[in-house]
Amino acid sequence: MTETTARERGGAGALAERVRAPAISASGLRREFGERTGLHPVDLRLEAGRTLAVLGPNGSGKTTLLRVLAGLLRPSGGEVEVLGSSLPEAAWRLRGRVGYLGHRPMLYRDLSCRENLRLASRLNGLEREAAETRISSLLAAVAMNGRADDCVAELSAGMAQRVSLCQAVLHEPELLLLDEAESHLDAEARELAEGLIGPAPGRTRVLVSHDRERALDAADAVLEL
Amino acid sequence: MDAFAALLGKDLRVELRTLRSLPAMALFAVTIFVAFRFGLDRTGLEGGLAAGVLVVTLLFAAILAINRLFVAEREEGGFELIRLAPIDRTLLFAAKAAALFVYLVALELVVVPIFALFFLDSAAPLPPLVPVLLLADLGLALTGTLVSTIATMSSARDLLAPLILLPLLVPVVIAAAGAAEPVLRAGGPEYERFGTWLAVLGLYDGVFALVGYGVFDYLLDD
Image (cartoon, rainbow over all chains, first blue to last red; front, side, top):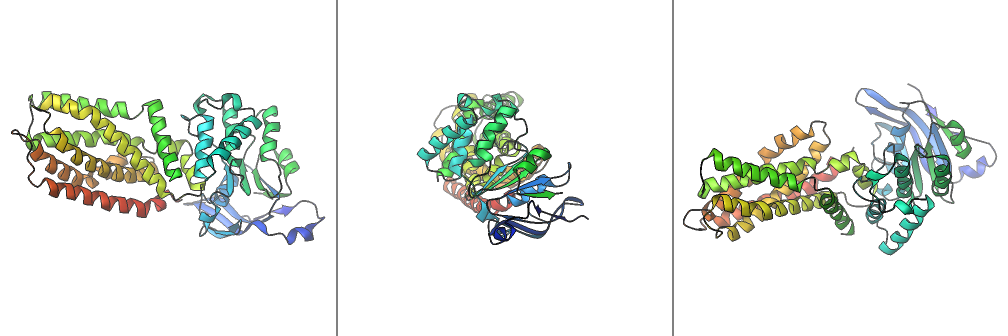
């Protein structure tokens, strides 16, 4: 069994950081799938407004960690608190406060990009008129306004990923959990995506990536699994 | 209510766009009617036999839609989308049951007149069949949605849904056939114990609405 702890990058300002409320704190967090261990015990603490890069080989538990932090998976053991809510007991308090981008898009293939985002906005309780404006601006930000009314089934994987990015930030979540957010994206799309999912005031991010260099550039803290 | 309308609207829009369930259900039901017509070698049915043929055909046609009810949620990330949203998850149960109810009503608008053409002497039994079929549809929709949720979480969903569903729907079949039997008698509609069977259907619907409300949230949980 291995134990993994997130470590801060750079020592300056560490004292000031400690007084901030943690967006995520975990101690001995682990997850098993029957006999198989999906996530070995992890300790981490991430202050609000900061970015954590989660790195590790395939099967090390990166996606499992993200799903636990999103409240989609119950931890098998340990303690974890996200945005002040203890999981899994108060996972319901996280709903609508987390932007999650998983391995596969959470998009209905037979709905258009706009219809998918409209559905997500209504599920998240956004006011209709404001939602329409935001959907148009998000699609424009990832250069997808020309394909807004095309069904997702007609899009390439990269285009669907752009729409997924819009969906993840649509409700302006406090915490962004991004699993390989730049997969399928070309260089131009990566630049566009950065505007949506990049650092922003008050936004806490957890990035899972295989691109070590880019992840380290973007992160304030690193968790090696 | 906006989330409920959004989820229901999504399902109906996708069905209208793709026509994956309704045409298959209608074709299946008509095929069964043809099979009964030639299998029984009868040009007319009445009473219990007519009620049985109608109710059982609708039940099996409904299973086609029930098997597909949560496919998009499972395969296209819809479950995650809903589990991350700040809504009561029971709204998904209500929206899916409502969508299935709409499919069943649409199916019956097409196939019940065909049933009458194939097997009945007149259209007189059709109006009193309306409340019977609506209450049976509600029971099918509620139980079907609940069972479909359980089956969707399994890799053997196509097998599991009918295996769990059919025993649970026996009361619906008994009550719907019991109510339809006097209505479909040869001499014209009669109403012997008609109200009692409608009450049984209503009670069944109420029980499964409460069961669905009570357990659906847990079924969606990890």
